Length: 183
Image (cartoon, rainbow, N blue to C red; front, side, top):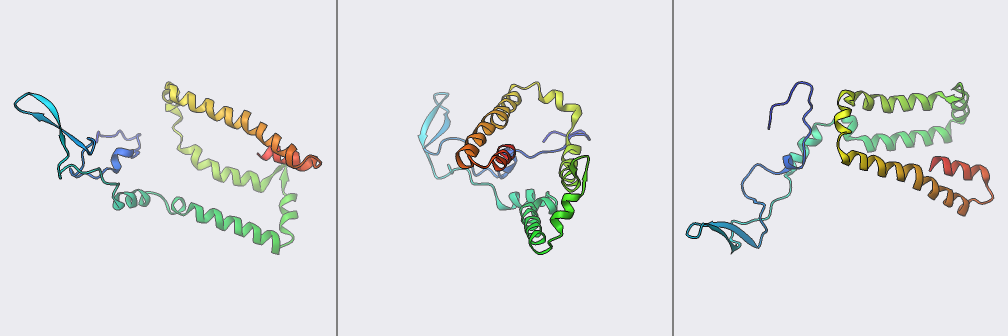
């Protein structure tokens, strides 16, 4: 691996998951391309016992990738489920929770929702290396991904949700608008 500068972060790729042993090669399993010393060319020979398909990534490599994550990241699904359960329990068994949360608004914005969004987005936005974004946007692939994302999220999804809202809620204008906005 090349040496990294202090500002760079090492990000493993798919080649890092291949075990460092020599028991696999990247030739098809039915032929082996060995140089023929007499002719100076390569010949297709039937596979021998030394030709093995490449093994899957070792479990210890996958576990080491998981160990690199923080406890919050490793158990993210659990935390989300616990937060949902806590919200349902508070909403059902503490009747004053809903009205109290609805009262806490500032300039028409719900303070608990604003705080929750900031807590979710701030760490991610701090990890973005803004000084290198111009290098990313030089590649055509990123523009294709942005275009596909734009079309799906801002054109197809609203049309789909509008159709579903009118199909299932034709007489409920308030619910129909909510479904369109949320969807």
